[in-house]
Length: 230
Image (cartoon, rainbow, N blue to C red; front, side, top):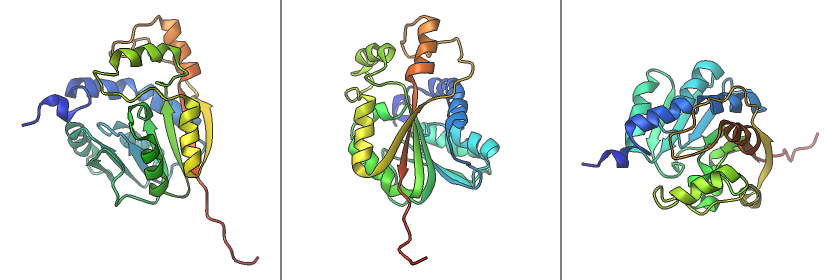
């Protein structure tokens, strides 16, 4: 049998705690995006235990949601917690080939974990409907001083890729064909309890990180233009 570390990103208890700790980022994301989610078909990249898609269905009134994650135990939890909601989950490292035509996609703190960033950008381009947008929140990047040290300390333990800069991420998605834009998240109150991932910082540094360095990147697949005469 697989041990717990194969089934979750950290452990069942830590992943549950992580999802709760991310709720303020989810809410900031929803305050920042420029799309109405009602009736939309939505993808969640690195869904873990599915909390974000449940929030989108319960409060954003999405039509249906799909999430994937390599952590089998977390995905099993997500499927169970979904109840009767039309949200579906799959164990996968990349976007399942059969999933497509998403109008909106999200990821939260996932970009820095991806080794094949070009492959991820290509997969997202394939999976989005024309005119669809992928919103990716990112805080662990080369332009984020507080998290540069954290990445250095955990690169081997968590098998992380090298640290990307924001410009590099934008360039990769632009080269694939996306229209790229970025915003600082519209943060409200930030929990004063620092994440339990070995990050050491004063509260003011934690606030500066969340308000200044945690960004929301938007990658939009260009809509198809009609060739008919008007």
